[in-house]
Length: 313
Image: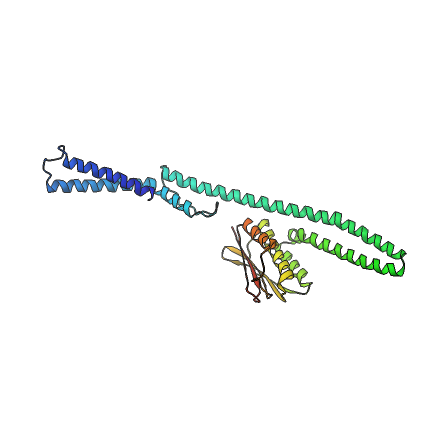
């Protein structure tokens, strides 16, 4: 039972008991209560109950509203704001404290998301730098050494050295490609649209036609949201290249109400028998960092759709 009704029932019981005692005790209006006296006492009791209920509702009604919202609250910082109550009673103070608490939780959550994304990107930047400066330079030195040995070796050995050199060159290209994926410089320099275009071009070069569609009128996005959209599109296209066996892929970015929607749709084998791996979990975690929702749907042989919805504030 809500706190408000508990107080009303208790006070009503006390008032009823006091009225009955007044009517039946020798201190009543008359020794034998008359009908008119009972009517007056009943009306007085009803008036007392009504006034009591009105007064308690004004002061304790907001308490029940806060209790209901606390029961419905699923995630910290995503609760519904309550309308401020007038006055300085305990209920009004509680409502204002509730709204202030939600504001603080949302601010702290946004700051935590920003720190988490910054830490992830800083680690990716460090790894990409080490791959480029250390592993890449080491492989370049190996390439130059193999080329020099190849010029001095016999024809038979030179052929074998050439094959090794080609393998090292392919490894160097892979290291550079991974370094570029870890550190999307095009996103920082040219923005999200150009970064998605570069992704589409890169994956089209490996034999899959990637069509890009960006709706006009998109709102300004924070760097954190742009980074998450780019990373999810990158991971989705990587999964298409590894598992989907698709011929056509579409990457679209648009707006739906107060949210930005990113979709990566392919015509591949689907995901019905595919167990979700770390890539899928990584996309979901990134979506949560910006308050978004990630859905992956697709049947056997019916292709796959990766859909990311991020609210715009």
